[in-house]
Image (cartoon, rainbow, N blue to C red; front, side, top):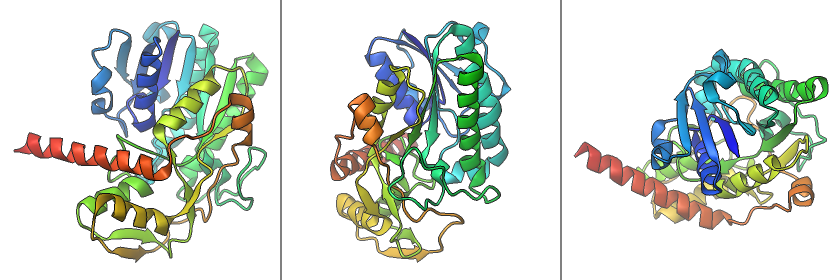
Length: 319
């Protein structure tokens, strides 16, 4: 199989590219590098089955550019608050024009298309845990709407193209994911806390820290994503870890995992910050035979080890 992965040099995208190559497939990765980086795919850059194109998918893709493919995984989009708030128009463009562009490649090739959507389509949910049938509670004009509503539009476009043009499309909704290659300043809870703990800074807990997150280790997420890609199911299907943790508990666990003495510091809640976030993964279990395997503390230890190693390499490079 030959796969196109948009956002292939990003956090999740780079892990997806590695998994596809390990399974014997060829991969064309496309990335604008707004939030991705070539260092994420440095380990596979010389692989004979891998090709990296630096390009904004919002400006158009074609088979003449990427070649014939059997699978299109559309992961391109700033996914962290720091990125989509800094690049609001680009975020909307990649969810609209970029999604249409990736869909056009899938249609031209007769390929399976999978949209990486997000739990953010549920907004600040009034239903808990969140099932795929829930339509969400999103502020359409709030600062987060560029991501929330962008992904909701991408879902609508993906579903419409399936109905109108017969493209084999599917949608997965990805819940909070963590692991190696996250950036310490991207605004997401795990890398932020790990960076702060390793730097001896206070861990900045938004509000009283009682809001919840459900954290899935990246290897588990990639396995679920590729299992879904091998079906013809339209989705949407939730992919995430139903083990729910408060933000305050996550902070305490990071302090323990890093051996830090950093205190906790309360800061204001961001606008439209969801109070709860937990997937119902019944459909993923039934359709894919999938559920997360890596426990939170094990995944956290792996993530901390990667951050320590990356910091050490950076220090050696600066010396």
